[in-house]
Length: 115
Length: 112
Image (cartoon, rainbow over all chains, first blue to last red):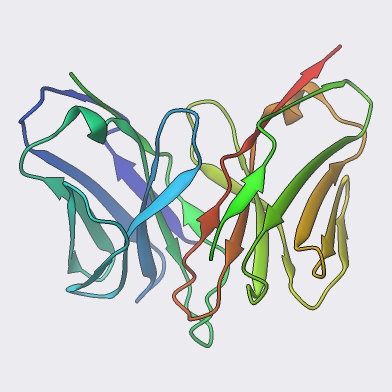
């Protein structure tokens, strides 16, 4: 069976500090990978997605970047955090079926508070 | 455009039915989903419906899709306190890669 791991669960970082959130998937190969952010009282916004190693697509301009150094590893980073980066970050993966995909499976999330 | 809208809050009595509504604007979306988020946790897929279906039933859950009005609903029969959570509607527009467009979520509160 497939599992997704995301860490850390919570993080408090000062403004201007760097960020690195990591997500790994087990039990499957060549998944689509995603980073979503949920701001307080709002829905989820897709930040990045990846269809393969080294392939990153950004959905919205922002202070963040993503990388996929290995097939089942997805990293969300920032060089200098802003207050507005606070939120709940969720990693997700899905199978690829005829390029349409299927359901997305989510990690448990990381609650980031920038102070 | 791509925009999913939901009411933000719903309160029901335990044992009653809950109906959570959603509207979307991309009529070409192939899949429509309902996800559940419990406090401090990630999202769990509850059910999904393919765009060529009108209804899907899965135990206490019933999903209705009105493509003409771009309206999706989730009915939970015999609502229990364990159903208290935030419910997200999401659409998967065509173009591949299974990118999801989420609504803001409906917080369901179940009281005795």
